[in-house]
Length: 314
Image (cartoon, rainbow, N blue to C red):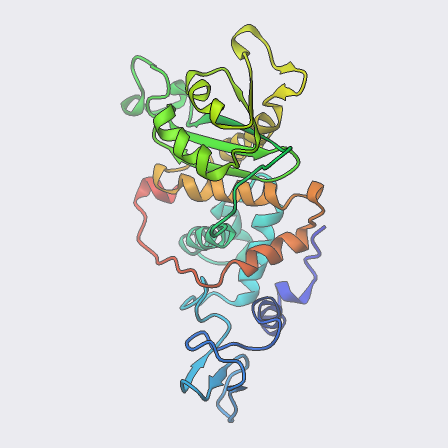
């Protein structure tokens, strides 16, 4: 449950101290040289709150330096509120909604949302599954229906997934999900992802598509279901977990974002993955989910490039 009266959402000092406590639980650390013992609060009549000075490298810094918030003029309490809104909204929140709620320009809200998605990105994750664990793999297409597209954008023959993007996801039952934007669905593109992202000691569950029959023997056990003959469950063999994840993903893209550009699809997939991996079923509440995203701001930068008209709608 989100308490929007919490001072961290409307008071700059409270927001700064909250981020400092997450980033520096043992006290301020110089982002330039990594020292702790030589860091002091910057004094003087003209010094603003939140500034620190490192005696070792003689540099000044705030909690923004070395994070996604560096060089941003948006107040920290608005960053914290935007992070809370984006992480607690199961199907996402559009940049237009953030623009209205935060009182900032749409362009700033759009870029702000992408920075928050970058903070959700997991660095160097270990493989999913393991001995005695089950991982489901499947793919889905992202893109509007042909009849809803402008005439110049339609695929006249409506062949397969032409004009659409492909998302490939791996879900550990009772655990985490990991999604990828792939150019095609075949053993050549999917095998490198499966063998690096899933422990080979895992049980692999898929549909009966040909690419999975090629890759499946590399795992401890491989079970398939044949959707073509309306087979969806056979004992413990099913892909219902990943289908449930896809239902949330596609409802969010269709109902909230409406259009996701090819360039940024991987960031939206990361956003939905993050919320699923920090869901209430795993004992994570809204506040903890927000703090996990705030912890991910360190050591990342995302510079602004002016979006073209198509990307701006994402």
